Amino acid sequence: MRVVLVGPPGAGKGTQAQFIASNLSIPKISTGDIFRANVSGGTELGKLAKTYMDRGDLVPDEVTIAMVRDRLSEDDAQDGFLLDGFPRNVPQAEILKKMLAEWNTGLDIVLELVVDDDEVVRRLAGRRTCSQCGRIWHVEFDDKLDDVCDACGGRLFQRDDDREETIRHRLEVYQEQTAPLIAFYADERILAGVDATGPVEEITQRAMEHLRPFID
Ligand SMILES: [Zn+2]
View 1 (cartoon, protein in one colour):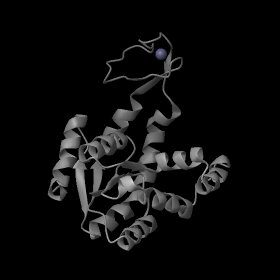
View 2 (cartoon, protein in one colour):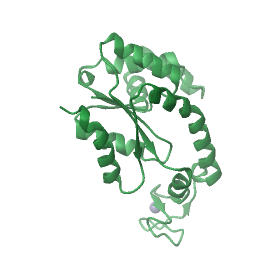
View 3 (cartoon, helix red, strand yellow):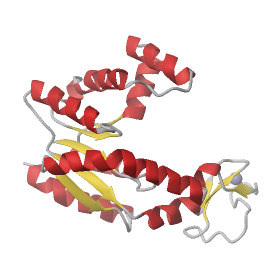
View 4 (cartoon, protein in one colour):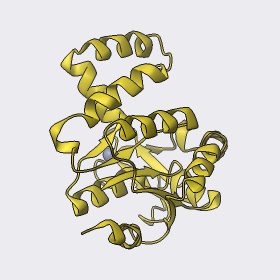
C-alpha cells in the first residue's frame, strides 16, 4: 500500500505515521529522516543539502525529490510506504505521481488529518517546557497548576513556538501551502479526511478504516 499522510502542526502526524505504518508493516518515510540519513551518510545529495541547511536556506525541491526517489527505490519500499512530509506542494505531488507511474504504480490513498485551529492552539499553547530537564508538560492534560517541573523541580516556561500567535501564524502558512495540495488529491479522488481529535488509538483506527479496502 502506498500512502501519503498530511496534517497541520499539532495534529499528531508523526505519531499517527508511526502507528499506521507499523499496522501495515510498511516503512514510514519522512523527509526529516531522509535528510538526516543522507547528511549523516555523507551522500552527494546529503552534502549538497547541507550547504543549504548550513546557510539557513530551504533545501531546493530538486534535491529533496532526488532523495525521495533514492529512498523509494530501496528494497523495503517496494511493497508500499507511508510518506510523511512529502509532497509538500503541488509540483512535488506531480513529480511523485510521474515517478510512481514510471515504476508502474501509484498512490492508493492520501490521508488528511483534520483538526480545527482552536483545538491545535489548545494542544500546543498549553505546553510548558522545563528549563532544566527539557521535559514537556501540559497545563490541561497534566493538570499543571504550578510552573515547577515535577520530575526535577526546574522552572517551566512557554517556548516561543508554543505561543498562540506563533501557532496561529504556522497554521495560516500551512493552510496556504497545503490547500492546493489537498485540492490536487481531491481531484485525483484519492483523498480521505480523518478526524484527528480524541484518543490517539481512536484516530489510528479511523485511519485504518479508510485503508481496509486496500488491504488484501
Ligand atoms: Zn525538569
